[in-house]
Length: 94
Image (cartoon, rainbow, N blue to C red):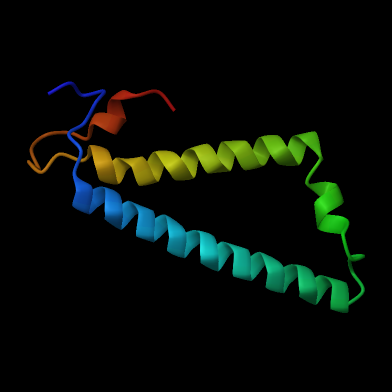
C-alpha cells in the first residue's frame, strides 16, 4: 500500500464527517453567541466581525489554525491498525 494513498475505510471516513459536522455546528453556535453578547454589551457594533474578517493577519492565523486542525483530523484516516507501526502523518513536515 502506498503511504501517500491510505486505503479508504468508509466507516472511518463517515465518522470523520460526522465529527467535523458536530465541531462545525458547535463552533458556529459559540461564535454567534459570543458576537451577540458583545453587541448587546456595547463592546462591538453589529457587523464588526465581518469587517475584521478581511484583516490579512487574522486571515493568515485562521488559515494556520485550520491547517493544524485538518492535519489532526486526517490522522484518523492515516492511522495504522498495528500499534507497532508509527503514524504515517508523523513523516510529513508541518
